[in-house]
Image (cartoon, rainbow, N blue to C red; front, side, top):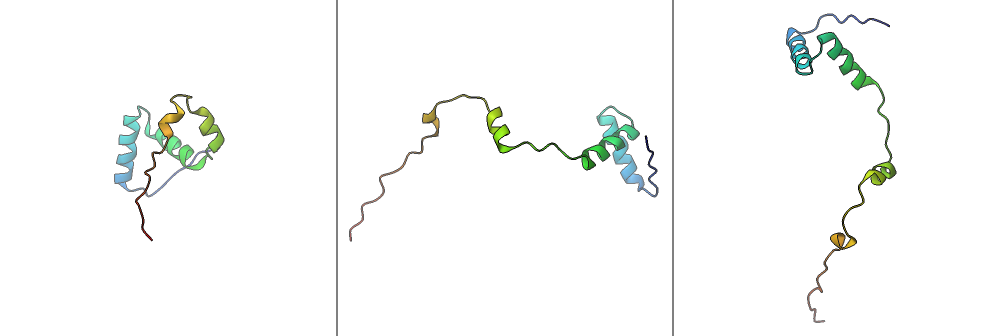
Amino acid sequence: MAQLIVRNIDQALVDLLKRRASEHRRSAEAEHREILRAALQPRSATSLRDHLLAMPDVGDDSDFVVKRSRGRRVTL
C-alpha cells in the first residue's frame, strides 16, 4: 500500500477531520482514507431501468388518473 503525507493543513481542518472521525467511530487516518475513497472512486452507475424495476409493485392504476375539467364554455 502507498502512503500519503499531507503538509500545511489548517488546524481548523484537522479538528474537523478528527470530529468527523469520532462521529463515525474511527481514527482520523481511517476517516481520511474514507473521504479519499468516496471522492475518487467511481460510483457504480445504476440505470433508470434498474431504478424502476426496483420499485415495489403496489397501488392501483386509478391512483395515477389525472382528473380533467371539461373546460369553460367559449362563444365565438
